[in-house]
Length: 124
Image (tube, rainbow, N blue to C red; front, side, top):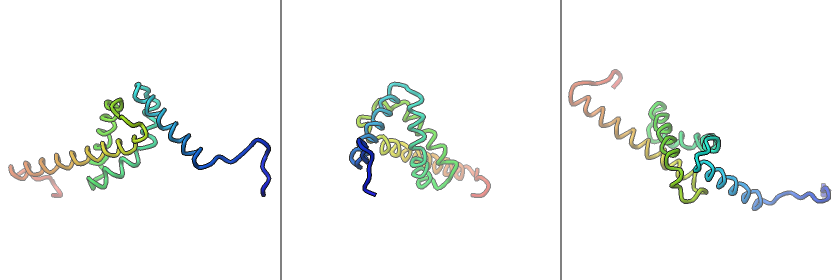
């Protein structure tokens, strides 16, 4: 049980966390230079969190998918403005939440205008 190979040790949680943070920072910095592969990795890592937040706000799968798609387009254009690469998840989730709220405002506005002029969609 207590046997370890010579020269080998189990990394500490601090070591693991430091490596993860360095990798995240490098990934964001690469994406900020236009590296599409790095950006695709960010999408893979953070899409689910963004989708959950958008769905909670929208309550509708199609609207939340549209909001997240818009959020990714915004993130691609603005990633160079991200000041702290280690805050990328919070930054991306905030963009998705803002886009979801915008989608809901548009939907309410469209429904209000439709009702005003007697155009009500089926199921409403």
